[in-house]
Image (cartoon, rainbow, N blue to C red; front, side):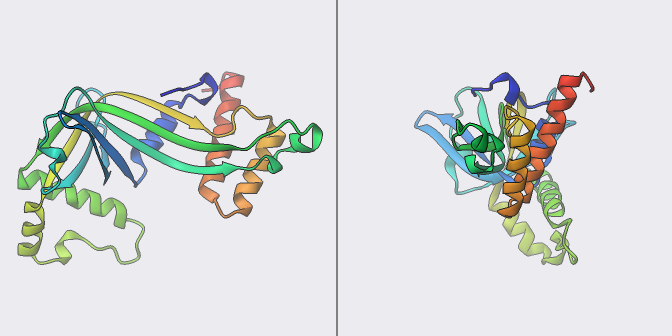
Length: 216
């Protein structure tokens, strides 16, 4: 991944990307070429040297049974947004501005391990469900469904564990713009209803200012 120094993601930003409740693309190189599947993942920091990502595939999806050549890759995407140059104060000052795209992303590399054990799968789907149901007024749980039905569903999936070997992460969030332009970006994103992207930009500016001031 191309990562200019001012867009390099710090440990906090990497942790946020790994722990956000979202789906990510699992990419594997196989003898018949690249294969990819979009999957919801859970980050497990206590597994292995660098943590692990846990997910699952449909058993009928042959990606899990294909021999994997080298490392596997999970591409995690944070909030992203088009940035209009009309939001910059610099547009009125000198006009030398162009559109761009803000985004956060992590490329997580590792060794892929397959799990078919029902106990592992049962624990995984419970944790995944609890994570995504946490904000609900009436959260659904696995126990709400008949046991024999859940057992059948578990037989139809295969567990995926990516034992992390390295992470490359980037937060391109207007850190290269002056504060007056960043103010305009936050205001523009907020007005457009993209509150998550606006918050990411504001948070990145605080982190960038802390780095310049030498604060941790």
